[in-house]
Length: 152
Image (cartoon, rainbow, N blue to C red; front, side, top):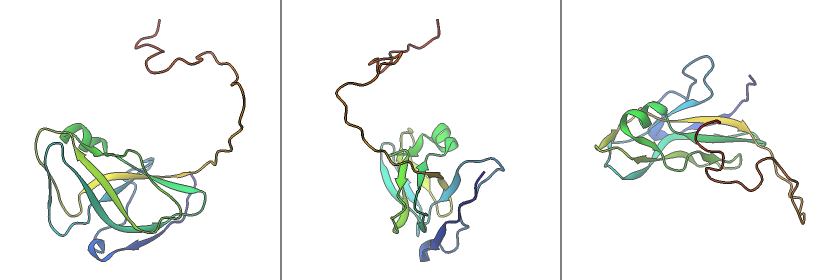
């Protein structure tokens, strides 16, 4: 694994929170915590922009992806709405997470609760090559569901 130094600024409303951390030795994502002045009630079907109290400066050539935490999604139906959300290397504002409650009960987000995970990844820049026809492939133009549900 490659270590990438990332500058981080703790904002006043999240100054008491620990920095995002990998929870296991081989985890790909760092857990992000909610930085709230008061608990946030997320009713079924509701969404909210939840602050983390952090601003970051990613190195050029990297992005951070904000993704759901599997436990919140599986147990409470709470997930990240624009998953994965992308943080670009030139963004310097607060990292915030758009949570949505797909569950059947109101969910309470509290200060310090781990609400999402962030994966830092290298970025590849696309260079378009305009052409009159694309090369063939085994799949061709087969789209949604074209490969079926089971293997023959």
